[in-house]
Image (cartoon, rainbow, N blue to C red; front, side):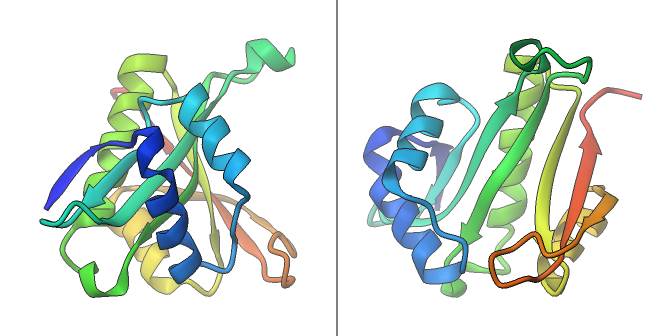
Length: 158
């Protein structure tokens, strides 16, 4: 298993992994924009044949560009690992690499993400394994009306 920074050539494999696992899907221009704008913070896991079996797609929210007083922070748009490759620690490794890159390259103060309220496995990963905390519940966040937990993790050293 190889985990590395995602490249433009990986986008079709990342999108295929997303389509196979998740109900929230994105058009290719969304994937391209992230890849070109924040190329150092998205990662892929590939099997011994070079197939994409997992990924994390992330971005940086820069309040200086939006004119707010909030701190620079990272946001995980999407993370997915194919079913046959789960429980190997890939999601944790992908998240940790992305978080480290957000912190070291962009000096992000925290990372945020949204997760379906019903996705117990993902919530356990984020909360119990990675240390995220629920910041708020966003009602009817998803297209099908399900609520999302908005979660955050500080990237600042204590």
